[in-house]
Length: 514
Image (cartoon, rainbow, N blue to C red; front, side, top):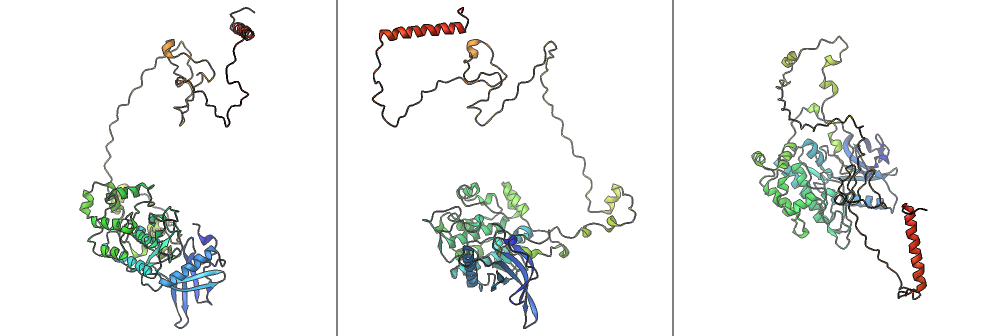
């Protein structure tokens, strides 16, 4: 979906609600609005609090966008007091915009923690605690009759010390347990009854859709990857999951116990899916999430080893190299599907930190040092590698000798014959081959000559069946139904015509003098 950032001008530095809130800088944008970091001024204590403010246009009353906007605010208010849900403090309508004042979480969204920080990789205590909080938050929302329908790591925020999670973005939430609004949310996290469906006779269970999304989120948290694109039979990865109970263990380094739990949550039969309370109990009693390092080494699946290697904890870096705007990606949940962060890259450090001052000085440059001196000074430089042995040259097949024909002029090579998808049925003939309407050439067997090598062989001609005559009405009675008997006059006329045709063909072929 297109971002609203192009429709909403930059409101940085502007205030609303009589100067109580001042927008600082945008930290996220998406299909449903732009999120700003803002300051809320408390007149009583003369202090300020950092907030997150979602700004979106105030649509016309009665429009589809206005109905969705009002529904989001109503449902978010209904669950705002749940501990694991982002708190909605105020909704202000001013200057043609709607301002939703939310709690600011500086830890970022869960996807950033998974993909960039990789703080959950092989960290069972933190992963278990955070996922249990997510289950508690979703179950509490269901207890109040609110079903999210867009649960994913981008819509789950974390605090700075990675101890608490908060569910956000209720723009697609509903109060209905059964829904015929298909393809709602993100296709990677939608259950099979919701994704790419349009049969209103078979509504899907919104509670089951949230449970399914939690199962995909758990896979993402433990492996850093998604198991398939869409839960349809057109997706071969999903078909492999249905046909092979151990399919996930052939691509991810997960434990047998976690594999069993995922099959309980991601079952193809909705009535057999585990409830959220059962899901919580299974996760709490799970002994381990991953294989051990020795089990990974003994695994015969390359995908398991590759996932273990790539999804590993990030080595700690200095505090100065941490990017200062890490939390600017934390509001994909409040923006929609697309998030554009204003943070710098996470390469760490500046250009001056990575270069020596002498490289940029105006003074005379010293002579370059020899390689041996550089190796002695810079201990981080690895020693030179020994020369790699060159492979023995393989004998190349020699072409057959070509006889020089000095007496005969060289003939140009025949043009290449183009091939097409239907060349077997309709071969493209080379120049000089016979065309349709020419006399049929003699076959090599009958003529004794070699076939022409300048072009493809022409397939033998096959007699065509006579066309079938189809009439919409029976034949008219005016047409003769019986053959007409030959008369003496007709015989004479036919004989004369036959003689004249023979004379004509004889003249044409020079058999008879004119």
